[in-house]
Amino acid sequence: MKLMLSILFTCAAVLWHSPVFAAGPQCRRVWLGPANINEAVHQKLTDLHSTLANLRKAIKTTEMQSDPLSALQRIDQDPREIAYLLQGAYRLIISHPSAKTLLSEKDYKRVKKGLDELKWLEKTLGKYSVQTELLETAVKNQLPADFIYFLAARRDQVSQESYRELKEADYLNKEISAVMELTDKFSKVEIPREFDQTQWLRISLQNEVVRINGKVSTEMAPLIRKDTYGYRELEEGAHAFRRSLRWIKVYLNAYSDHFSLVRDSNKSPATTELIERYKAKFSLRYDDAGPIKIRDTDYAKIIKYVDSLRKVKKTGEMQELLTHELTTFGRWNEKPITHEEAARIIESILIKEEGKLERKTKEILDDYEATAGFKDMIVEVKP
Figure 1 (cartoon, helix red, strand yellow):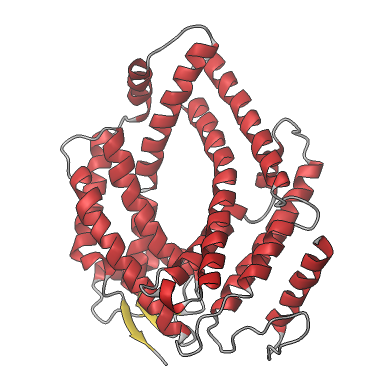
Figure 2 (figure 1 turned 45 degrees about the vertical axis):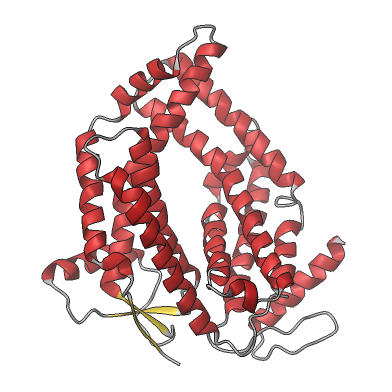
């Protein structure tokens, strides 16, 4: 089985560089065209395979055997980020409002199952990243030494568990077989030939923007506009708002060959300054290659919002998780502490600028609503 997957993966790599994709006894034909969904996804799967192979090598040579995933710091690209982009790529395919009827039942299930697999990979790696951040936050805020020792032990435990889970799921075996299997399955997915792929992505993106706007309006905005912030307002309001905006950014970056930037004709000095400030973080380019044209001021604002809300996300997440760890530590240390007591302790340490965080989130929500939730960010679609 591993040999067959290896042949399929090699075959897909050859196709990626070939100007013509011909059917053959071992390779299924994929779509032609300069903007090709299969090619975009395949390239990211290739990147994921390479990054996980590098992680495997780094783990084998790490000196911190108690913390094998510390090897993530020694590789150039974070596999979580690639897995997140791939989630965006898969999601945008099945976000088309008629995806269930236009795709074959097998193809829809292939994409949905691949999406679930990528979510699992990202969350498995994410458990370790969160535990590492908890330890760093505790050290930075000078929490008690015995609690920091407890968090270091918890980080090592999560690192070992996640490493074992990734190995058992074939994400860190010699062939990185799980990614090869994802590549094989996605190569079989076909959008019906009567549907233009560019229009498919445009419709999917617009559908997602409408869906996100609805959730922001009905679920997140009421929490964000509350007078005071607790954990629910931070997590289900501000953090959920950031996640929604990040998905728009991920969708665009996942298909960066299909989307390109066009200069906003109504720029003000403020928006010109905004674009100059965030241009270094642009994944989309100003060129004619990407047929779906995105207004550059909207793209810059999305990046700004996601970056600006990062502190809100971190504060809410760290507050809740450190509270949980402190109650667990109390039981482990035979000095029980209630959740309410732990929450008060952590909140007094972390939320030192609560009012500032609230104002920042509300300002971003106001600006977002003034842009009509980016529903007009697509300027044109070239044939």
